[in-house]
Image 1: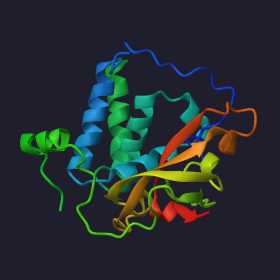
Image 2: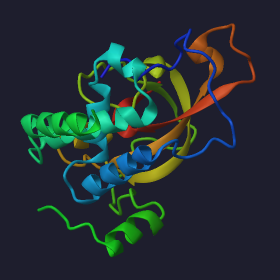
Image 3: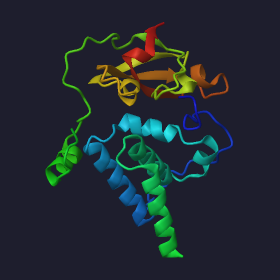
Image 4: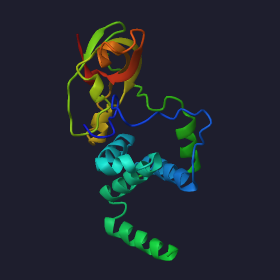
Length: 103
Length: 117
């Protein structure tokens, strides 16, 4: 798919951070996101390649604004809905409930 | 059938090196030293062939063995098992004459991504 993820050769995106001491997870939710994705793939809910394609299909403007693990999470949610593990309504309802809890 | 994710499965996933390689006897379409051209394909599905390498000429440097074709598996069309190689491209072939002459880049490409130059 010719989309924003295939950015090799593009200018204007800034320097690549190659810090040797960069931490693996910047927050707990990032680790949880990775664990969830790996578990879904180990459980044969979707393949790594389908998962990558789900991330490629994120709206290009939105894609650029997401962090690395935010893309993983968006891809995981898209896959879970596509495969019927959860419905979009269930996800929206749960998100709404959690937002109310936080408020 | 969905697998149950237990500790043994997690251990095997994380501790088996090269687990993605398929133990299948598939004939390679290319050999080391072959000069190849990356195909100009523009699929709407998933591919591991980046845009900037399409139509460019490179040299087959290493044969990693047999792997599933990501394009096929992403589309739910099976493994399409085939050889995957490291192909070396001259930086100037990819980016033009302003690229440093000594630079090159290596990309892993599958049989279906290439043709002989």
